[in-house]
Amino acid sequence: DEFYPIGGAQAVAALAFGAGRLAPVDKIVGPGNAFVAEAKRQVFGRVGIDTIAGPSEILVIADHTANPDWVAADLLSQAEHDPSSQSILITVDEAVGKAVDRSVDSQLKTLATGERAARSWSSHGAIIFARDLDEAAMLANRIAAEHVELAIADPDAMLPKIRHAGAVFLGHLTPEALGDYVTGSNHVLPTSRAARFSSGLGLYDFLKRMSVQRASPAGFAALAPAALRLAEAERLPAHARSISIRSNAAAEDAETGDVG
Image 1 (cartoon, rainbow, N blue to C red):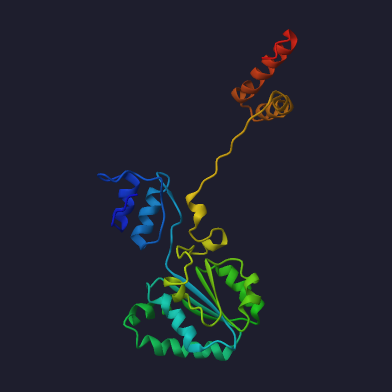
Image 2 (cartoon, rainbow, N blue to C red):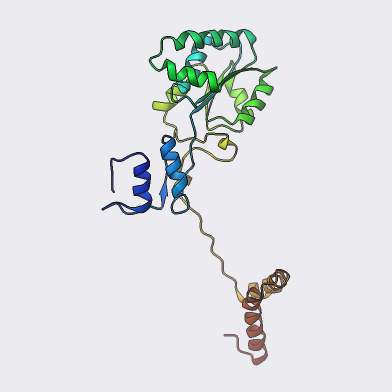
């Protein structure tokens, strides 16, 4: 095993190209800032990567049972990361939405990171009022956020309706910040709507598949005519010949009685 206490874009370069005793690797995974994301973008192809992570995101779905101060704190927990972070509340209760808005303004005044969080909330924060929880789920799936909190009375009933999210946090006592540190799930998650087609970093990111084929004489005889027709249709004569040369050999062997 090897361990190198390095980070940043320079670490991505060292892993991709090698540096001293550090040999080039095949794949680079993990989160980082904008410079790390750009470095991973530039070395992709030379090495594999997991994803190019964007700014942090949180989406909270809340009903009348949600505590507005708790929801506001959760929204700001991601807003304080970066001015580009995105914090969205979808609520089916207008009173809760208005209370959360007031609480966000109040809590921003007490945060050491308030200036950065305020820029994020002003530029990328939103409170959306939905007709019902079905519409809230539909909107959440369109946004496909990195983190989705279900701050509602029955989060288990709603969970099957959430199809696109990096990670889902169920109930009032499961804030996203708990997942940052201690709940144990992987926290390298898709951002920028990538949850529509990708998942958080996991075991399968460190595995790859390889197909293996073998044709028996009978199998080749059954498949060769179709392969030959397709090669001819694509006007790829070398492809066709690699099939016909074997078909001709098989036919000659059959005539001479040579079964190989």
